[in-house]
Length: 227
Length: 116
Image 1 (cartoon, helix red, strand yellow):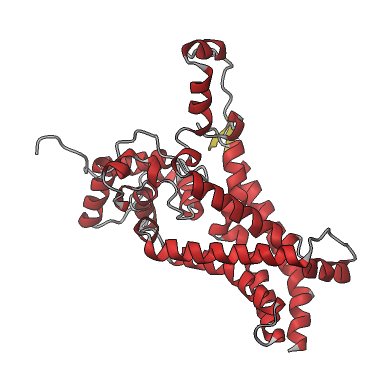
Image 2 (tube, rainbow over the protein chains, first blue to last red; image 1 turned 60 degrees about the horizontal axis):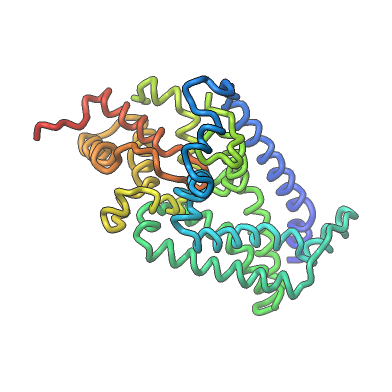
């Protein structure tokens, strides 16, 4: 069992990081190869200028139209806040977890900043609570259930099982060694799967919303269209 | 064997990308006025319509049964008016993909008629 631990801690950890980073780079290159910049004349003459638009509507209406109206912030504000918190925590927790960073220091000599164990423990509990909520949505809400397939369950378990096993290992609820080995395996599996499964929305959320030309492009800066 | 028309093949990367990216979160649901007008019937949800029209066409490489085509016809003409108001938090262009499904149906001679 100790051999397996060393394998997961050493070469397999390194491989999973390489596959993850390589996969992310591959997806970014794929995105830019399959999209192109669409130049738009500054004012083609048919469209009203910004100054003219301002004269049509009162400023509060423009703010409403351009920022919130029609987006998930207006249709589902509470769920949007909750899911934003979840996504932030799911990324921050493993990065700033003390035990992970001690292993990184021992292996590669780099000491990334860490949060206290108490804080990351609370973060993990919050992530697991979100897991239970998302599980409830997938099973009991017809609007989610109707579009749920095998890939979605894979995504669900790939994300939450590393957190669950990590929590159980940290609190030594079951036998520590098998649990920590399972945790390391699942964590590395998640890392490898991010660029190649539905979890790639982690990368493409930013690429799509910042670079693609769309009504809802962040800061209205997106100027790329698909080839 | 693929039975996809050029309009679908020329948008292959975009369709494939959207199908693999959609997180099935259903956050697009309330952005569709037909979903709201039909008491939250999930078959009016933009992601459901996208996955079960162009998604199905792409998955089956265009080799669809008459029943599949009838279902897609119902989705792309009866359940979507292409008002382009639906909103995907991941930035998937759902109306464009549904319009591709309409193109496919037209090429197969399946379209909305107003005389019955």
